[in-house]
Length: 62
Image (tube, rainbow, N blue to C red; front, side):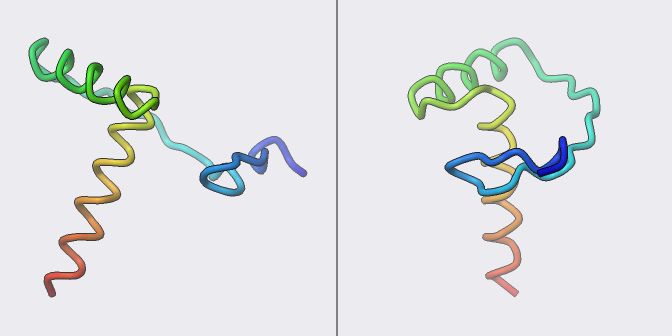
């Protein structure tokens, strides 16, 4: 396995990630942190989950 192909039990092989800065209001950030903790995810993983879900729902409406 290469460095970018480490295995993750939930997602299979880890894909290359591209980082970017995301500015959020503090209240929203805290709400997302709490929600992520309830779902046993990191904040980053939870935001990615929410974005993937939103894209999937948008595609299914077409």
